[in-house]
Length: 293
Image (cartoon, rainbow, N blue to C red):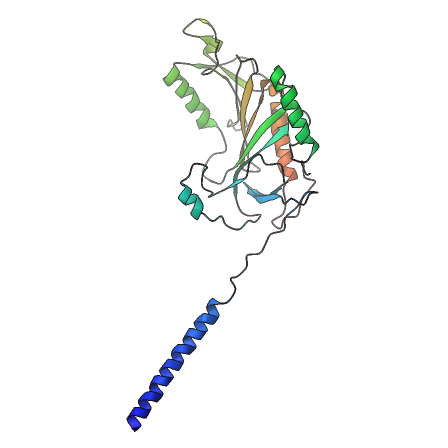
């Protein structure tokens, strides 16, 4: 009987320990998950929150209604990524340190203002689109795309890009790009076979493979600006790219060739716009935001 009694006591004590452990585990699992601090957001007059993150070197707060589409952060799946990958992807919590890969916006060349929904610029853009483009008049808006550069080993210049472009034109189309003796608006100009189609001996009637190419180098001889432009269309356009060392970004701008003489002003104004969106790591604005609704 004594042995049987001790067995019952021992079994009871073991069961009690198991219950205690289970209770502790239950208690731990029931603790609320640690909350990620919600960052401060600057907002517009309608209460819409800015898009936040870090662009290249600086923390940034982009006014609501400015971005054309959406901002892509480093690590986000691409537009054509596997839907299963997109479904499983979880972006890190938003903060002023979350690196932005790219975003786009519309900028008015004539005065440096920015397209923003629910601002007068929205009506201005629609009016210009309806009354200028159909009649072949210069469209004063430029499409801007900004790309953060985060590879410390990648050079912030177009040296290799331009050289490779010349080599591809020669190899694939037998087109030599010839440096022109006179600069244009401070840009060094290269024309396809000096502007002559080698097959006809006449000026190019189509610039599909023969767009004018222009560059600007810095004092160290690195190509910091690259522009190629149409020249045979009813409305010619330019594709303009430049690097900014301070922000550590690459910028693309597309616009009517009519505004090519203002290329340097465009670069300065795009940087001025970005400067106006710069904030501290806590989200405090450092100036008045251009494009704020």
